Length: 378
Image 1 (cartoon, rainbow, N blue to C red):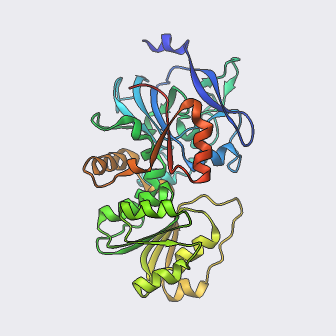
Image 2: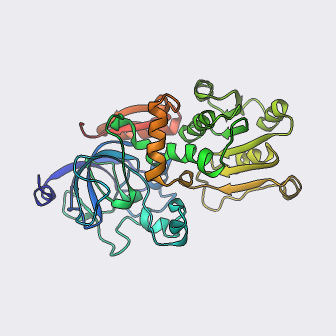
């Protein structure tokens, strides 16, 4: 079909119209892609904690809105200035960035100075326009992470579309655009965990377990997973953790020091809980490095021992999206997966679009690590 023909057609999308949800399946319509945009037919979209954070207005995105930011699909049409993909390409959708600020220019688009405007504003940052309309013809807030992929179609910018190999299972790949990229990228790009080193993942959800897999793939020899859910810890061992700690029963810092002596070389917190972040820092050996990747409640404060940081020369840093350049990093993760070295499929459970609220509930209860919403056929 032509772009003009498509623009008149309706499709199903999950819309959040009030704080706390629910996701409501509604009829929506979409505009043609602009000169720098890509129209994608969505095959499947991962559900991430940030979708619930936005639904619940912890991050105050405008409503009504179509969320979804781990989309994977097939290119239907491209704007006149788009050259990196063409109709029929398989793509993963990731976060958006401006491309012009200092962090973007220095190769760190995840730290874009305009990140919130490009990913959370609910509209195009240049003119405040929308790509989506509701069933009543009124605009829907969209552009969530530059995509809003909880629907059968999405408009993305050419900067946040990643072309992927066609022999990879497309319906599985969406979570590489955010959650899995965050965990793996923190290990490989930000902390630069080395062969033979030690690493601790505080939190064994999808992000934490992605970090465990990446640490194992890079050759770390002592890998801890810390959580309170026994099933997650069992899976962590299967995915490469050499030691597991149920922090509801044991002191994780003491457990880590018992095995390592002085502590681990690297640690990552994906919980966003200040007390857990504190333990991640305490668990470091002298000159060790910790990364914070979990979203904390607004205004959350850390209570850290300043002398421990100074005298033991410890480092602590925030990391967004694994400090990744998606066009480079996501294909690398796919190659690792197809080589059998990054089995992230073991985190995934599939749901249909009309089961999206069930998927959210299962995720929040901890029963599903990484929900993926199947939306369209291949």
